[in-house]
Image (cartoon, rainbow, N blue to C red; front, side, top):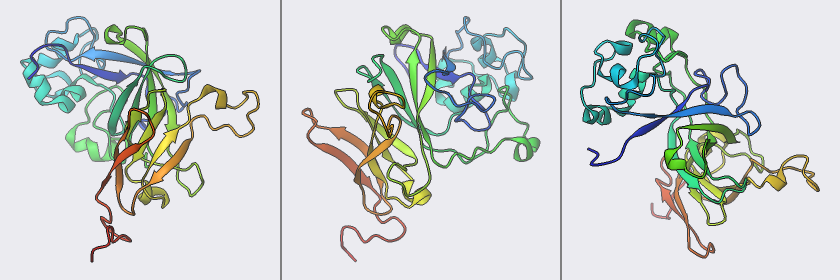
Length: 292
C-alpha cells in the first residue's frame, strides 16, 4: 500500500481529551504557551517510540509502538501483523496506541512564508459533537461503559491550529512540534463571526484563507471563503493598533444558502479567487440556480 517512505501520525500529547480545543487543564494553546506534540511512525517495526498509552491500563510502561501494534491484547484491540494491516485501519491503529483524537481534521497546508517569519503547518478542525473512543490516558472504553463514560465533545464552531516543527528548516526530519490555536470559530452575526473551517489555501505571500462547512447552521451566515489575519503587526499592543484583528476571519465571498465553500484556490497573480460551491440549496431557502 506504500511502495516507499514512512507513515507518521501527529500526537497532540497534552491536548484536553474532553474538548479537543484546549490544553489539559482547560488552558488555551497560544503562541506564548503552546501545546506539545510528537510525530509517531506507524509501523510494526517501530522499536524507537514508546506507545503514547504505555504505562496505562492499555499495557506496560516502556512498550514500543511496534510491539503494541502486534500485541493481540494491547488496549483491548486485536493485533496488527504487518504495516499493510496498519494502513488498512488507521483510525483503529491510532486508537490502539492512544493517539489523541482530534476534532474532525479536514485539511492541512504547509506555509513556507508564514507571517510570523517561521514556516508553519496549518490544520482546519471543522467540529466535533460526538463521544471520544478513548479516555484521557489513551485507554479504550469498554463497550458496556462507553455510552455512560466516554466524554462528548461540544465543539460546534471549529478551530484552525498552527503547528511549528522543532526544526522548522528541516520539517521532514523533525520529530516533535508545538501547536496553538490560530483561529477559534464563533457563533453570532458580528462582522468577524465565522464557524466550521474546512478547506485551506496558502497564498504566495503566506496569507491563510479558508472555506467553511456548516456556518449557516451555527450562526445563520452563509458558508463563505475567509481570509485569516495573522499579521503580527495587527496584534493587541502593537503600535497604532486600536482594534486588533490578528486571529480574526475576514469574509471575502459568501456562497448561496445551504452550500459549502470548498477548494479555495488563487491564480498565480493572486488576482482571481476560485472556490467550489457544493450542494447549494441542500435543505431550505435556496432555489439556486433559479430552476424550479
